[in-house]
Length: 392
Image (cartoon, rainbow, N blue to C red; front, side):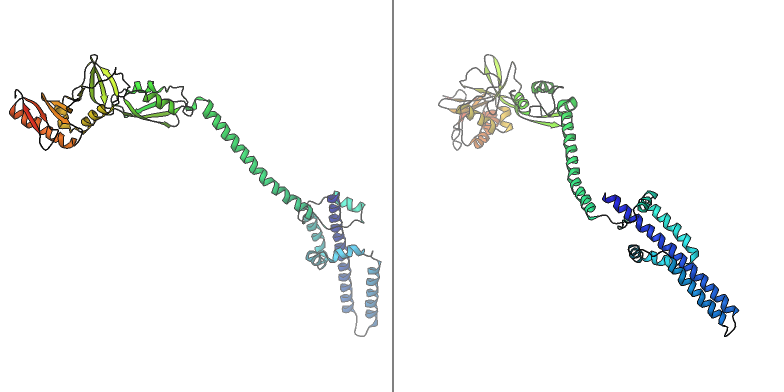
């Protein structure tokens, strides 16, 4: 109802303005006609002729009478005409010939502003209604502006909520694709750091197959499976998206062997039994005189005596290790090693570095010079004792 009344009021104001321009046109035409008659009369009359003055007075009376016969402009319309603005005042000052053009321009402007014949008809039917002009170029009502601003304030959070919802749905769809499909299934297992164990054996031991999902893969289970191999001292399992797994292996190295039940049980520096073989590679040192239970691969030998023997193996320089064939521990003698057919008694596991130097000099110098030597006692490094073979 508010919008219809506003349209009626705007149309009424425009009709009133059009009427005022018509009245101004008539007034200007009469004034121009009067001026022409006065000019013509002035050109014809002689000085002092009373006829011209009477004609001029009679013309003024006709002009006034014509003005009185016009329909009086209503008070409300008069106020609207007075408050019309610069465009209406300029229209009153136009010449009669320009009035038609002005009316056509006003009609075109009203057409651009969206005012139609329907609004004019409503104004004609209800001429008593008068309101301010509204239209596409007029200002909006405060209530409409407030409603529009409120809608804008409400729409901004709604857009944010919509965008957030779409983002969550997209992430959920992406997670579903990568979790419940075969897009991230493992297609390659790379093994690094292995020397003794083969890559195929380690891949099989890890339990990783082409059906293993990269995200669902149990890394701890893979590590436990690989660590069950005695040769594996450590392992690092890493995922490489989209379809690759890398196994970084740290292997144990055998430092000696123990003969038991006709088998050579390879053992590392920490006492881990690595495997049982029928033949041993050169360069390994036999560990003797150690009372042990049945040895199986994967078992770790404990005890202080074995730790003392392995400490001697770990302290040997490479030159001494090359000529050493066995190490062990005997009751009453302590640590010893065998090399070049001679026994070197170490005694306690102290000053191993100094004793190793003396043992290397004795085996490479004295034995070669004097021939067979029964033993060399370096329990006291400051007073080594050498007993040649066959001496009493």
